[in-house]
Image 1 (cartoon, rainbow, N blue to C red):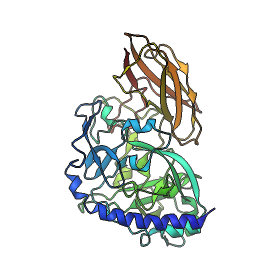
Image 2 (cartoon, rainbow, N blue to C red):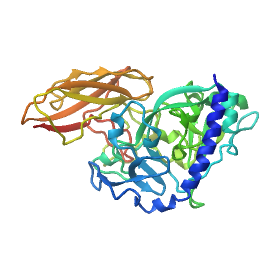
Image 3 (cartoon, rainbow, N blue to C red):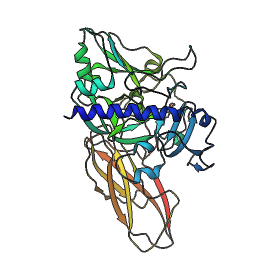
Image 4 (cartoon, one colour):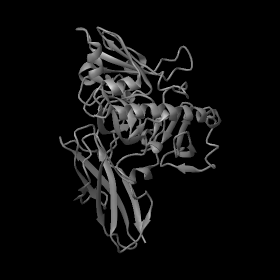
Length: 413
């Protein structure tokens, strides 16, 4: 382990983000819209799907869902550029409008308290120096990714498919920090809070909780680095929770408080929000009511074609390479099937390098389109325990869990 190097990274992150803080002083200029993006817009495949592109500090031009709080979507073309999503292209999702625009990495602390034997505080540098560093690659996906594609439409942020990203995370195991504080016998859940703050006193502070079994699992991290660099400010600098395989609502950003509870958490964001129907599919019919709900949890299986856009015209008579990505909630992708005729016939694709069970898995195949014909391209991912995507979209009123087999229509010319 190279703890001196980790300390240097944390120190550099402080310097970099103090510089970024000066830039963030002008963030208010962007909140009214995307005026700095040369009025460039993208039309997504949904009603009211026109989105401006804008550059925020430490970010390339991304699709703006909202500017207060900041919510930025990654263009799908980024996912064709490599298995790792670059930091400057990584999607952004905040829940509350009061997000700090300046963070001093030396002064920032994370507090561990509640049902522990010894309340503790650590700076990011102390975490890097005092605990074993752990690295893993994992997909971070917003619970509402693809919500804008639901029919009937549902309320909430109208994301297309780009509220996700795959990064190489580095940090310390949460369980080691909990063990350092010492858990009391009645500890049952762990609640996480960040520096994101509500704009009004009556607005619930954003907090999320995990059962102790999940919180103490091998791969849950307090991360201080992302793709070999400090976390971008908009992605949670200087510390964020990483819960591989679970939806990003649990990946609390600017993590500054860990509270161990002796009871199930009843805060709004756990007891009322981010909940799904308590059945095997997490779905219901639009007219169903009074259905029992449970907190959203592990991600389901998904795959996307990344190198061909819907509606594209492709050259006839020559081999067409088709590439994409697949992922799931941590069991790992076993195979990806491809169809060029709308699902009547399927072939097995060639999987790329395995970066771990939580990562995107690249895949590719090819076929030869014929002049004057139209094609419906589909990709179907199957994980190691036999779970797969669905051919019919499943619906729930929050717009969660979409994992339908997506269709890309093309024509050969």
